[in-house]
Image (cartoon, rainbow, N blue to C red; front, side, top):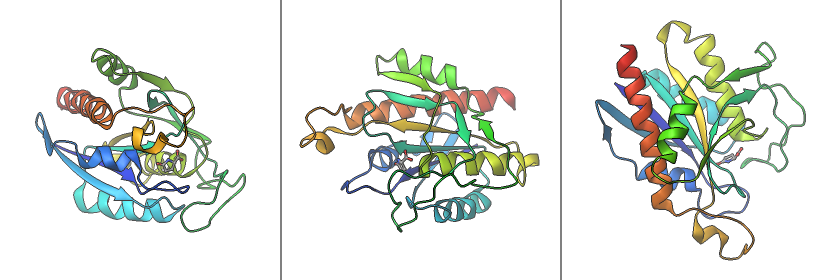
Amino acid sequence: MKILVTGFEPFGGEKVNPSYEAVKLLPDRIGSAEIIKMEIPTVRRKSMEVLTEKIEEVWPDAVISVGQSGGADSIRVERVAINIDDYRIPDNEGNQPSDEPIYPDGENAYFSTLPIKRIRDAIQAKAIPVTVSNSAGSFVCNHVFYGIRHLCETKYRDKGIISGFIHVPFIPEQTKEKPNEPSMELEAIVAGLTTALEVVAESIEHRA
Ligand code: PCA
């Protein structure tokens, strides 16, 4: 079994992105799953090009993308991706689309196919703050979440790949000069994501 986990490169003037900082520290194996980690650019379209290439090389059983959610005070297990690119700030290559569909032929929205409530409950059981979120925004994280779900529903339909998205808070080094912003220790984010992967690996095992 293979699970592909992605994190993003820093954006918006930040020096690090807690998503990739955490993804890098994940174990290489969880249960019977091999964990494959990659960093993807915080860039419209290019993020999906890089990810698509990797998926077609690895053919994972699940793809979990992780991104930074500045201002969040908990790990956010995302429920839904929407077919809109509407960027509050430019991405890392200066793209700033407004109200544009990601794929004009795609559905308006796709739900995560990860067991989101079981992931939440398992993370909560470890006393790590976590919520199910009903919006992944309309920036590059939603773009990738939507993009991978669209592929799973169309081109990869017969592959049975499950996919979804998890947002993580800032880590303390990012909030030193933002006194009112919440943060979470990197170790807690890594523990939360590891727990999420355990739940996903288990659910794939039980499906097989
Ligand atoms: N967070 C951004 C994009 C990259 C990231 O880590 C977002 O929430 O859209």
